[in-house]
Amino acid sequence: MNIAICDDDRKTCAFLEEKVRTIYQNAFIKSFYDADTLWRAAKKEPKRAPDILLLDIQMNCMNGMELARNLRGIGWQTVLIFITAYADYVFEAFDVGAFHYLVKPVSDKKLAEVLHKAEDLLTQEKHEIKYADMDFDNTTDARRIAVKNAGVHTSVKVSDIVYAEVFNRKVALHTTTQSIEYYGKLKDLEDELGADFYRPHRSYLINLKYVIKYDSSVIFLQGGQVMMAKRNYAGFVKAYMAYIKRTVTGTE
Image (cartoon, rainbow, N blue to C red; front, side, top):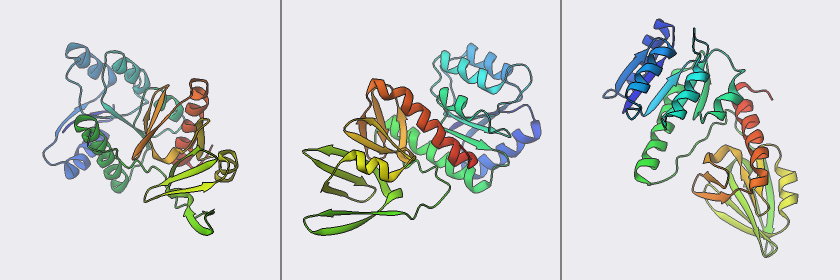
């Protein structure tokens, strides 16, 4: 594991190095004390991107957001995790393909959780074994809905629904543990489930909690993928950014 840290506060770098080392004892960890230094190193050897980059935003000269755009511009596909004292940049962070956005002070537990999920994603991308469970939700959603099929009523926990799809007048609910089919309309389900769900295509309704990655034509979820209608792409990005902001800051 190759991990880079970029923060213009040396104490923060030392703190993060110590915390990362407790999680990955054999990792190669390198700190950069300003964005310019990292940018010069990246331009010199653009193919030597770290697996994970922990990046501050507010720094002297070039800030972390500008650096992130530049790094993406030279092809860095590193897993980018912003660690900052400011929550105001959350939307911009995900515009540059950030994996996560942590607001200081970050607990040891949360840092370990996010790093392990980043490791899962790296494993999935390199070996195509499985999709990681990207549960960024900081709250426990105990809300349930009831569905009926062939006279059988099933109670489904909303937070366990990964996505739903419609075909032949039936809705198929795909949860983390099972799939359930029932006669119904996807629009009715969309209205019932609320803001944490989005409809990127007329045939699909997804739980934003389980989004792993996406582009303008497909969304990868835990255990599956769904199509994205191009006309819905901008709306999806806006909804996803709002969801991330809610889970990071607890606000819209």
